Length: 154
Image 1: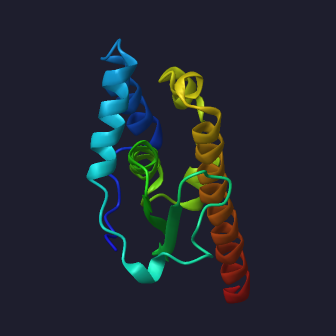
Image 2 (image 1 turned 90 degrees about the horizontal axis):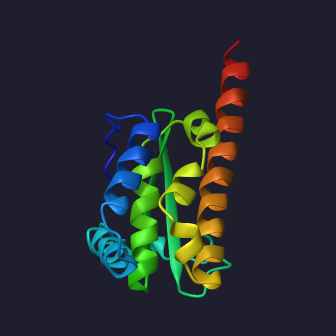
């Protein structure tokens, strides 16, 4: 797992994604961009492809592995479907290496600004929703652990 801390804040990364996608008027080109992003995902080790890491609510197979390191959350994900892999890559670009607070405070407006929600099939949109919910759940659990750990040291 790569524990690189992002240089840019979440809002800047979201803005960059919106600009990248909105360069293309044609949705065929935007889907190609998503697929290309998905192809750049790190290979996920087989031991992370567990039932606990599987995202339920997605039509395709999707796994998301989370590790906490120095108070930040690091994700590794993959899917067996090309466009969904791109959605995973997009979310990892936004949320990987962030603190739980950053993840929980991050607005989701960028998805609407990209036009993504209107152009995904209902099944893919549902899968995207479940991926975001899992990332937020991991962030909430990490935040609770961090608060408890601080309380124990005081």
